[in-house]
Image (cartoon, rainbow, N blue to C red; front, side):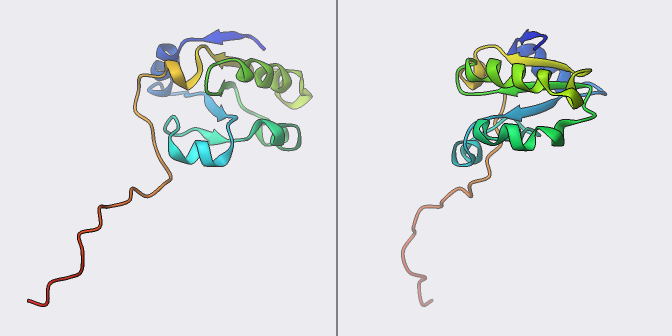
Length: 119
């Protein structure tokens, strides 16, 4: 792991010409309820089996709810031979510290407005 990066720095990098790959290590249900736009879901327990999918990335930022588990994920990613040359950071404070917009995969339920009127 190269270090921790602030949520503000992540937002800035996402607007750049070379955005990092954001790896959200939460479980799919949590990810679908809200995640950083453009991030990819690789649950922590699946990371060892899916780490090869991160090969070739120049910059990887790991994200979790509070910024603790993502440190471990960043260390694991950095130790992998195929990602050893990449810059690998953990987002400090996790999603709790994120003030930007979140993207959801869950369709927003609309209020039940009752049966259609016949006229």
